[in-house]
Length: 356
Ligand SMILES: Nc1nc2c(ncn2[C@@H]2O[C@H](COP(=O)(O)OP(=O)(O)OP(=O)(O)O)[C@@H](O)[C@H]2O)c(=O)[nH]1
Ligand SMILES: [Mg+2]
Image: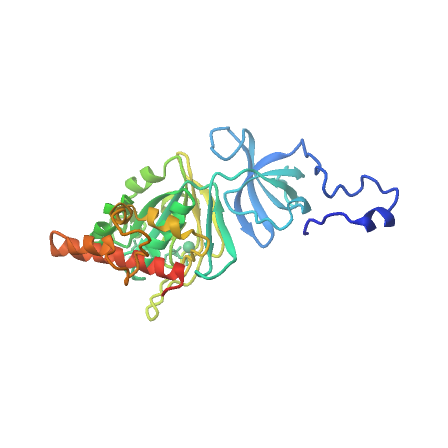
């Protein structure tokens, strides 16, 4: 419900009802509220973790239990998302059939946002309080799209999150070229594959997991990427009782089936959280400031310092230092990599400024 400023009618029509509608005064304090960590959201019902041994970054000490809650009217339309820490009142026992109420969202350390496309004014908060964005990209099936990766990088930098690029399905294609494209940007890269038949006891396993585990340990990481790239498969490999449903990639369209439909946070053995999210087609950046874009491309940012004043950095920009940087490549391989990076930067830039 929208907050409303009281007007004359409030006072005339309801004399004597003083104090019954504290619209602009403080809301009830809910001093007895307990803290919960949102692990899932499904049609107005929130799954939360309450209590715990005090070892977890998101869960307060106390007897750990999973409870279900709805939003109280106090917080109006504000979206509560996976990863949020909230204050809860009402029945917080977690017993079957009980429903607690979320009365407050605690301050968020980070907010990952996206818009449907670059002109969409409506920005969605995807998850809260994550410190690392894991861009899950299949090396094949579906084909990798550097544009998507670049855009996720921008969204992560904009949200103040670190980036990990996880290249899956290395059993199907060589990770070399993508590695070469992203490692110079300072993005950490891990590569996983389906283990050859016979290696895994039940016939199907993802390897190697050590580097992935190390990169995720103790942190709150959100997995994003196109449908079918293997986000849920990887989560299942990392979290033994995750039981996330996984889907197939359509042979004809090369697209996944959008198997996962809502974000879910799962605790990693040994500490830390992973948040599995539904596959997205694109990552709209309407909410990102153009000025911030270049910062997300560290290598280009340094080069662009040599651009003429007011340079747009677009294709037709005269004397843009980024073009000179490609020209000055020491060999063909470098030239190809630089040209590809510049191209993807310009694509994002052009779509943000409407020049595309
Ligand atoms: N060959 C191969 N296939 C894989 C690998 N990882 C996952 N897959 C397959 O890719 C398909 C899609 O995997 P999912 O884990 O459902 O993909 P997702 O990213 O969670 O997809 P959405 O939930 O739709 O966003 C499944 O058929 C997996 O078995 C891999 O390393 N190699
Ligand atoms: Mg999935």
